[in-house]
Image (cartoon, rainbow, N blue to C red; front, side):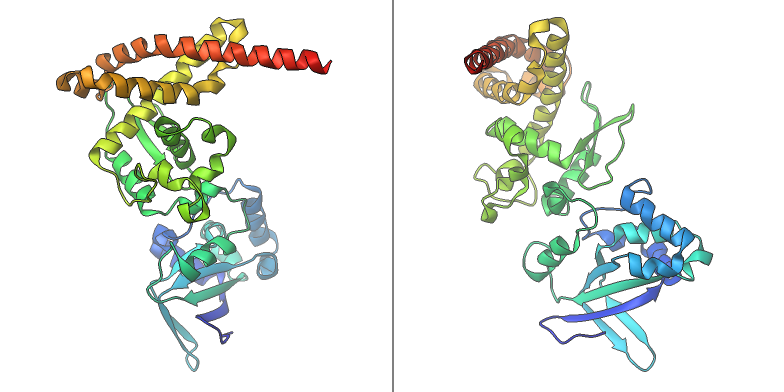
Length: 349
């Protein structure tokens, strides 16, 4: 089917065996524009896909929404029934293709898959029709606001930078999870998800309240009155493709400090019965730490400051000194909050 519209489109059905050949040949390159990779066989939707292929492959065409793809151009030879595609990307259908790649060929011979292919010349994922297609076609699995930012240039740059940043003393190697499914934690690395980095960096640089009250705002673009530019951009809230070395070093400091603060506040919870949920104030503690660090860094010699950024003994000394001050403020604030809640409860009774 080739409808007449504002953009070129062809919709057709293709045999599962042919799709498997294409998926095996091109692998993840097919999904560079997709906001997720194959999420595995365990999810409810993907279990259903596998079961349909296994038990009723002829019904797959009717039960599955198919695949949506973008390309720069295509040419269909009606006489030979041959379709040539230039620069194709699957924008919705990673789960369908993942299930097909895992299925036996004898079942796939009976599987037909609906494919909707749209040609948009010189398209970008950031604006216009292609961005809208990526957003509106992704409805089968529940999406989160960070998913729509997973392919941004800054996210791809961060993935590369973290990959090439080795362990530094007490700072483990970080595997950056910019899209699902995320990498797994191991003894040699810790996983940092895109959404967690956004919250850490915004609380570190700007305001600890937003990561708690409205974290989705951190992944909405400035033109939508979002804070994405402040979470991942520059100090003026401008969305950028990469950071300076200084910004990335500052980000590593924020990440390591957040983990240390979370651990230290959790220890306080366990040691003192009246501080049961004080770790919930870790975002405030992170902002206070950065304010203290910015105040003190001018008096730290350059060579010692470099040692702080290496996350060894000098960093631990600085952290312990800062935490003594920060913990007093956090504990006092926490007890004041509990006191207010207690007074309000008494008035209601």
